[in-house]
Image 1: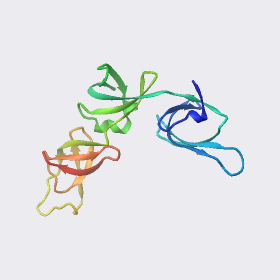
Image 2 (image 1 turned 135 degrees about the horizontal axis):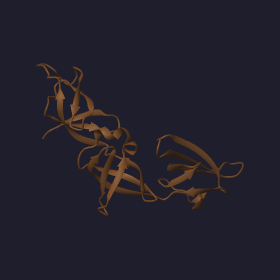
Image 3 (image 1 turned 180 degrees about the vertical axis):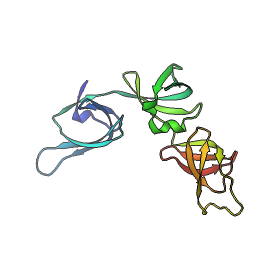
Image 4 (image 1 turned 180 degrees about the horizontal axis):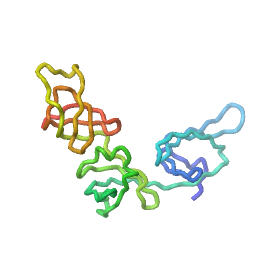
Length: 188
């Protein structure tokens, strides 16, 4: 559906050059000389590439109505991951490709924020932080402190994380899913 430039808002979806984009920032610019224009910062939903485009106010764009839904991870079957829509309780299948790097932090019963376009999931965003248990790491030595350094550890999702030397197997930690960095130790 075609919309005018004046109908564009932050957070909406647009189809530009056959690609699906999410509007990150929308600025209406009225220079002292010449006609007004609109500068839009767009984020490609599949590649996360950010693009900045300028449009004249007379142009029209193709609207892509995006819907946000919360979905809970239920189980994996091969390369397919099954999620339950928390509002309709329907089972939705999401491919490995859509989950991307966040897949290594996906835990049972994790609730993700899914973007749907025409009833299909086009992006699934994991929570910013997860709480995970250390299942494998080298033992720490007496005198190891938080400033002494880091060691590799395997968490219950199977991912590898760099943790401080004083943390032991069986302890629970908080991990940033965007960067895979240890945040803090969590008391059980």
